Amino acid sequence: MAGRSGPRAAAPLALTLALAACLGGCSAAGTPSPSVAPATATPAPTAAASIPLDLCANTGADCVPPAGRYLAQQFQPPIGFTLDDGWANGTYVERAIQLVRPGIDDATQSLSIVSGQLDGPTGAAAAAGTTAAQFLTYVRALPGLTVSGPAAVLIGGLAASQLDVKVDKKANVTLFNLPISASQEDPFYLRAGETARLVVVDAAGQRVVFVIEVFGTASMADFLKTEMQPFLTSVTFQPTP
Image 1: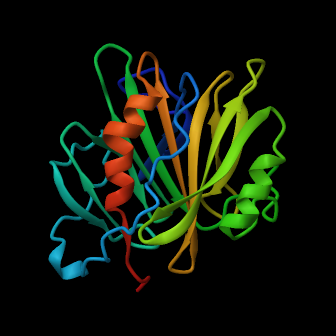
Image 2: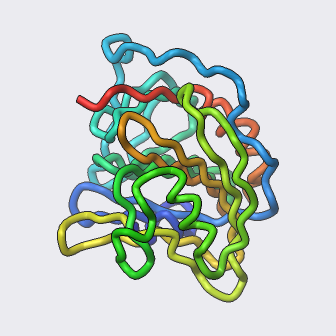
């Protein structure tokens, strides 16, 4: 994932696929509250037939999905969630989704979701592992990051882990590389001084990572409370076809 242009000066989780996709990353301020997804049971998975909307795909400009219930069937594993008004979708491909919530001036919020294989900063396929537990160990070992957690949370009715990461002020940090093809990878990086929240879970045979970020004057604490907690509580995972 490489930097992306949008309604704010962005960087981090930026998946800019020159053809059918683009993922962006972000920057945040302050240390977020310790928990996003409440440790209570989430709704049972909803049958795909009862979720009429698929997430609109990026076609060169962000699409703006209306408020409602979605099943992103192209993403693996298929993931259901509820969106309210105000979101734009910059990326929707098999292994990556990026949702952006622009605000007034430069106050922008972002949620990126990636699944499957994630390579380390040097492209080493084994570095980030294949499970949620291995990914936690990998993140803790990355240079330039201060890591808080993990905290146990639930997402999609599954046990998940949450980490808060703070980037050293001296340099950007590549969190991982997303393989695009046999010869191409897109880096997902966090900017110097940035704070972000990661939620990682093993679901339907895939490791899924949620990256929560804010830009500019946006408040991470407010974003977690008003947007991310309801979103993560609404998540369901469908069996991979």
